[in-house]
Structures are given as C-alpha cells and as structure tokens.
Amino acid sequence: MSEFDVDLFVIGAGSGGTRAARIASGHGAKVMIAEEDRIGGTCVIRGCVPKKLFVYASRFAEDFEDAAGFGWSVPKPSFDWPTLRDAVANEVTRLSGLYRKGLEGAKVAIREERALVEGPHSLRLAKSGETIRARHILVATGGYPAFDPPIPGGELGISSNEVFHLPSLPKRMLVVGGGYIALEFASVFTRLGVAVTLLHRGDNILRGFDEDIRTRLRDALAHAGITLRLGCTIDRLELLPDGVRRAHCAKGGPIDAEVVLVATGRRPNTVGLGLETAGVKLGPVGEIMVDENSASSVPSIHAVGDVTNRVNLTPVAIREGHAFADTLFGGKPWHMDHNLVASAVFTTPEIGTVGLTENQAFAAGYELRVFESAFRPMKATISGRQERIYMKLLVDAKTDRMLGVHILGHDAGEIIQAVAIAVTMGATKADFDRTIALHPSAAEELVTMRTARAG
Image (tube, rainbow, N blue to C red):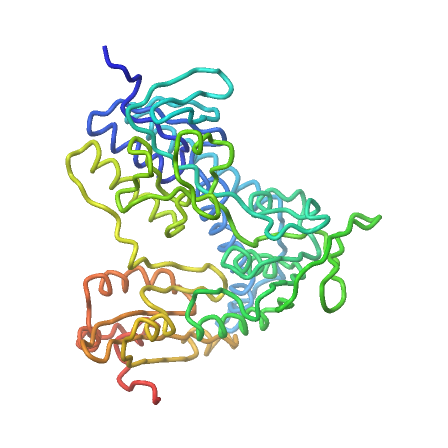
C-alpha cells in the first residue's frame, strides 16, 4: 500500500491548476484538486473573460454612432446595466461548469474547500478536516487585488472582483491605478455612460510598455472623455451622507463618485496557506520562488501561474501547468520560455505587443532600426470618427531580426497573436518585407513600412 493518497494534489482550480491536473491525470497520475471559491479561477470568474465581454458591450456605443456615416438610421440607443451584468454572470457560470466537467472527465477528484499545506507531502482541508498525503503538491492559487498603499477609508473602495456585480450603474466612477486593469475598466465604463476619473500616482500610464504606446493611449483615453489625474495620490476616502465617496487628494481638489474602483495591482495569493511552515521560500511580495521547472525550494512542492509572479498572464499559467505535468508525470521534460510572450490591453483603442520595448532594446545594447506608421483607419474615413492606428517595429540593425512589434488600434490583440508566431520563429524585417500585403486592411502596414525613423 502506498504511503501517499494521491500522486498530485493541486491547490487552486484556475487555468494553470486545472491544466496541470488534467494533463497529469492523463499520464496516469492519481490527482486531487482543491478550490475554495468557484472552479475556473481569476480569468474565468472575475478576470479576462467577463472583462472582455464588458469590453464588447462598451464598444457598441461607438458602433451605433459610426453607423450613421454608412447610411444607417439608428434610433437613439439606451443601455441596461442589469441585462449586461446578468448575461455575463450566466456565461461565467456556464464556463465554470465546463471547467468542472473537464476535471471530472479526466478523473480528477475535486474538493471544494480551502487546502492548507502542513508539510512537504501533507495537506489538510480546512472545512472537512480531511488530511491528505501527496507525493507532489502544486500551488496554483493565483493573485488577489491589493489596495497598495493602504489609505484611510480604503474599505469604501471596491476591487476588480466586485466591479462585475454592481447593483446599478453609477453616474460617476473614480478609478485608481495606471495599469492595464485600471485602464480597461475606465475605458469600459466611460463608454457605458459613466463619468470616469482616472487617478494615478505616476506621470504616465502603463509602466513597462513602449513609451510611444503609453503616450498615445493616454491621449486617446483623454479624448474619449476620461478625466486624467496623473502624478496624484489619495490621502483618504470619505463617505458623504448621501452615499457618495469623496476622495481627498494630495494635490488638486477632491473627487466625488458613487463608486471608487481601486486597481493598483495584485499580489500572489500565498497568505495563510502554510507554505512557510513547510519550508517553501517566498519572495518580497509573497511570491513562491521557483526554478525553470516550477519547482520551489521544497522538492515536492511546485507552483505555476500568478502565484509565482513571473509573467502574470492566463496563457502563461496554462503553459507552465502543462510543462510541469508533462515533465513530472509524462516523461517529457520541457519548460515554459518566459522571454517572448505576446500580450494585449483591451482598452479602446486596444494594445497588442510582443517582444522588447524601445527602451528595453537600447538597455540590452541593441543597435536599432525603428519603423513607425500612424494612420486613420479606413472605417473612420466614412464614419467621421477621430481615430488613429499606430504601429511600431523594432529591428536589430546587425541581424535584421524583429525584436519587438507594438500596435495601438482596433483589433490590435487579434493582429499581434499572428505576428507573435513570426517573431517567435525569429523573423527578420526582410521576411516581413517579402510578405505580400493583404489589402485593404490595417495589418498590411506591418509589411509595407520601408523607411526607418530618422535618428
């Protein structure tokens, strides 16, 4: 009789955890997974999936306006928040059910309660008290919204977890933060008719992205009607007698809003899991320190996804989970390469990016050729909308290899996914140049830029 109840115990049934559990089970491992919330994790339940549905809803506002330029007579549209909110909630429930079916179909045992680590091979389920001995433990608990730094009255704000369930659409919203979550929700709610103010302590938005993309998106958000308060912090939040939240700022006047959305970052979800008692080394923000094979400082305990604070994207967590399971249980060792990962920001206009930014390329010592194109999309010539698309190619002057591609504009996320294949394969500028343009399209600009930026 084995000294272990299971070969693998997974804590967290999000994207990374469920992928690892299913692949490991497919390799013949006996697997159990625990989830204290809803199966599906951050992306499915309170992240990228419901957010993208909100993004689709918000863009209809401009579609209705643009239709007139193309000959359509559209009655003045009205928006019903409960209809969108409940439809998105129903879709989330459906997807959570599919995740459950996938686990059940893979013969993974499910425990819907919090799991605590009590040793290198030992776990306890908090609600039932059940104890499990596992040959290997995988932590895939993701991250949680952090109100950082904490401010007096911070409990009057909500996080991105709660924003999907607002009882009614506010007239005014204050969004605190300058990262992609803050910007996406600011972009969504302003198009749903909410007066949005974005407050950020930095002097520009989207730290870590290419500077030209950052500046152009900032200007586009302001043009969309979002009030930007940059280089500003909140001293305290106050609840007024009528239920309105008042933000007292370090500089400038106070800001009143029915909803204050705090989106200042996320932290790895490791608090209270018992990892320290098992000897697992944690990093400065609570992340589990792992090697390229997702192994922690304790050989039997691994971690994938946002809880490791490497590249915090759902597809990365999925790939890490798959690699972990193949390596440990399938006899097919491989690991995730975090050096080249495409990403998108679903603001309007949206961003698609892969590879190095211009500053990163210079810091790495590359001699660059930079190609840029900024133009009005074909649709806007008839609709009359003041919209621009911007594309930027960063090329290694010595090898001609494409180092980075950055796009701001309609369908940037869709375009960059295909471009990422070429960049991952090591495509050169000459490869782009000999690719025949698809006309008329915005994406054809990627293969028709011929003159590098001066200087």
